[in-house]
Structure formats: structure tokens, C-alpha cells
Image (cartoon, rainbow, N blue to C red; front, side):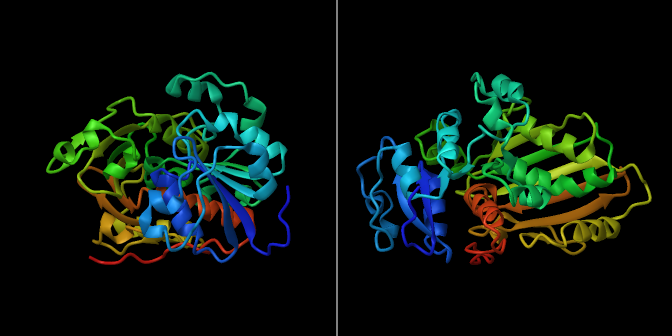
Amino acid sequence: MDTGSQTKVPVAIVGASGYGGVQLVRLLLDHPNVEVVYLGGDSSAGQPFGDLYPHLSHRTKLVVEPIDLDEIARRAQVVFLSLPNGLAVQIAAPLIEKGCKVLDLSADYRFSDLSTYEHWYGQARTDREVATKAVYGLPEINRSRLAIAQLVGCPGCYPTASLLALAPLLKQGFIGLDSIIIDAKSGTSGGGRQGKVPMLLAEADGSIGAYGVAHHRHTPEIEQICRELSGQDMMVQFTPHLVPMPRGILATVYASLRDPGLVGEDLITIYSAFYRASPWVRILPTGVFPQTKWACGTNLCYIGIEVDERTGRAIVISAIDNLIKGQAGQAIQCLNLMMGWDETLGLPQLAFYP
């Protein structure tokens, strides 16, 4: 790998033309410690990135290149893979062998048990040795492991919102493990940039609907981390919904409290302590509940908390930008930790409003 005389860390983005890729390009162009030196793609190869996304044409003259692993490793120290599920398994291992740090935004390296991946994603895996080295890229629970990682499986957007809402309760054992219900809603960009009928304006606008009911692929991902946090086997009820907005996720989590004496103020204190060293999580005061607009365009997760004393349930509501904290921004947050940089470096902290 040749980094030449550059003082900034050279970065490659493979799969640059999709929504995840363009978020990475946009954010990394303003990151003080990196230089984007390679954009890779398949169908978009040969096209100037500024033609694909004209609003960035004045900031980058890079052309999307065919995916060449030798060339990537020669020019880049860090590689972001923003590809459909099933493709990173062919790319990550050779890049790691060539000395690159790899951050995968797909589901390929999120699972510690690859049989779970094979069952839910329908693809056989032969890279178990490489997969065992992957660190799940949720910094708020894996910060120390990310500091020494070479391969990161960046979380899905729904799991990010859901797990940040659940982690303190699971870690402290405050809730019944068979009582967790996650009701989550996402904007249409969560479906990617490909043309899909449900994402058409005429289909999605003015409507809201559930999908993937009882079998969404993010369910086992959420359950895996919930088991790690609680130390016990468990399942969750997860239902996602599509709402007519471009970006954002709102996850409302319900769970029965084991201690009927806990009130909302107690949980706010518990959450504030749990996330006291987490600059990207904002715990809201009593009676304030987040909206997706607050997080839009930022790497923040806003969390509002209440206890329904009548039912004995905790109600935790989290809001994130699905493309930033739920995808590209979180990947850059992981990169910052991997490189020993400040966790907030190069990431947006305040939304424009309204």
C-alpha cells in the first residue's frame, strides 16, 4: 500500500453512487484528517461523480472507477464498502490481507453467528475466519473494541435506533426480556436509490404502512446485540413502517419494567449516566419526545423516555437520520475511533430547522 507523502489518511469508497456512498463522500470531503482518493462502482464506472451528483461537482473531480482491489489497496489505507448485501464477502478479506482497514455498511459482517446470516439473507458463507474478526460498529457499546478493529460491520439503521433505546435497560436488567416491542418508522431513502414501486411518490406520499412484518432482516441483528447486552437468550417483536419523508427513523420501544417503583425521572437519570461519555446521544428532559427533523442531517440520536405507571411499561422513543447515524455518519464515527481521533471529528452536530 502506497500512501506517498500525504499527511491525510487516504480513503476509498466502493459503491459510491448509492445513497450511503454519497453521504460518505459528502461527509468525508469536510473531514480534516482524510482525503478521498478513490471512488469505486460497477454500473456507474467511468462517470464523473459530479455528473451523478451535480451539487458536489464543485468539490470533487473524482471519476467512479471499476472495482480493482489491487488499485484500491495501493492508493487507500481505509476502505468503506457501501454495497448491496452479499458483495462485501468477496471484497473485504483481500483488502484486509493487503493491509487496509475496512468498514462495511451492508449486513455481511454484522453477525457473530454466520448461520443466522445464511438463514435470513439466503447466502452461504465461506469466510468464517475473516468474519470472526469483525467488530459490530455501534460505538456506544463497542467503543474499546473499535479502537483496535481492522474490519467493522456497521449496524443497520433500524437496529441503531432500537438498540440505543434499549441498551441501558438491557445492560442493567430492568426489563422483562420477553416483553420488548419495537415499533419503528423510516423514510423512503432507507430503501436505497434503485427504482422500486413502493418508493414512488404516487405510492408512498400521503400513506403509511408496515412491511416485513414478523420477518424483517433487522430482527436477528437487534436480537443478537440484545443477547450480548443482557447475557441471556431472548427475542423481540419488531415491526417497521414506511412513512412519506425522504430520511429519518423514529423507533418507539415498549418493555415491561421489573421494578414497579421506577418512574420516568429514574430512567432519565439512568440513561444520562449510561450515555455520559457518548457525544452523539442526547437524552431529553421529562415530557420531551424526539422528532426526526431534529436529527436530520446530523449524526445525533435523540432519546425521550417515559414510564406508564398504569401498565408498568417503559416507553423509549429514539430519533435518528437513517443515512447519517443510521449509516454513513456512524461508519465515520467508527473510523474516528479506529484511528484514535476525536469521536465527533468531521460529523455534523446540528440540524437546520425547520
